[in-house]
Image 1: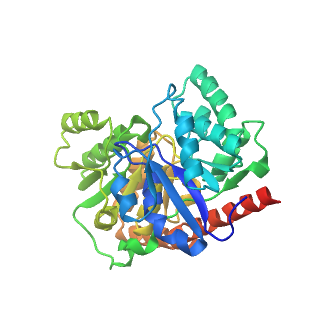
Image 2: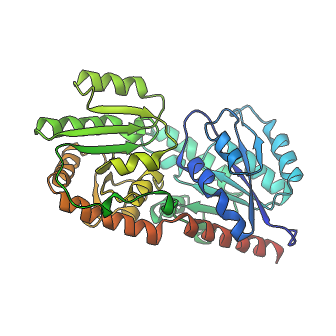
Amino acid sequence: MCDTKRKIRVLHYFTGGDIVGGEETLAGSIAKRWKKHDVEPVILYAKRGKMWKYFQEAGIPLVECEIGGWLDWGALTRIEKIVKEYKVDIIQTHGPGFSEIIFGMVARKLSVPWVATRPNIMSLLFGRSKSRQLIYRVIDHCSLKAAKRIVCLSEIGVQGARQLSWVPKKKTAIIFNGVDIEKFQSVATNEVQEKDTINIAMVGALKPIKGWFDFIDVIKQLQSEAIQVKATIVGDGPLKAEILEKINKLGLTGVIELVGWRDDINAILPTMDIFLFTSYSEGMAVSILEAMASGLPVVCTDVGAARDQVLSGKNGYVVAAGDVTDMVAKCSALIRSSQLRKQLGQASREIAVKQFSEEIMVSEYATLYNTILSEKNN
């Protein structure tokens, strides 16, 4: 039974590693907000992960933990020991994988409620063969059945979860991602002015699923229309060499710059004019929210929660994944009208403030935790 004399202690697990995901970025950013809601997070994370020092600086209890894959059944004992030592009230995992099976088993054994945050349902992910979809459907079934709640980031996510016929609606919840609004300066408040060169950015892991070659093709086609653009790619990952090779092959060296993973994205985005996001699969992209908070018009693909974030014609445009021609057309319209960029950028900022702040997200999670513990105790 939860000790009512102390804060609700929530154990969060992130896989860690060289590539930083949106969930890790959010966890580091919102740490300061939990105290207000009587929640105390404990982070399980690989020490080699890039966010380790940021979790430390945030003053969050931090435990080094890395699950080594399918054969690491010793993780069961390690996780169980940590849950007992820290007197954890709720376990929360972020994203699918073998680790969910481990945490589900620990949660069941110790009667600790488990919340599975799922940006995506694995069997529905982009590029999966039918055989892999079947395998992942079995994994989803084995892991998520033990979850007290499955937190989805959009209505689309809930629909995906409901395709797993054994997931009742009452077991799902929608909580949007949020960003630190005050951290980002809106460029849309600046005076309208024509520019000789337009700056376009995208932020994300350098993986095929993000559609980076589409991004490069858009920049190339814009240049072929005699439009002066510069592009910035923020992120790191296994596709870096191939991206650089394509940039060189298309003669875009000096036009597209790779700046790697950065922790000062709030300083980079205000120097941009348009945010272009070419992904083929998402939950709710934190980078789109950061661009919105920075007052940028957004051109993004119709994946995940894109339509919850971007209202076509109001704060940007939503296009079909892979439709480079339409991406070029939408970017061209924004490039040719500084007034349109400002109008859509202002709307981006307003939507971010009203719907996608960290405070709203943290408050909704705190409410969920209290509801779960109340159900358990009753």
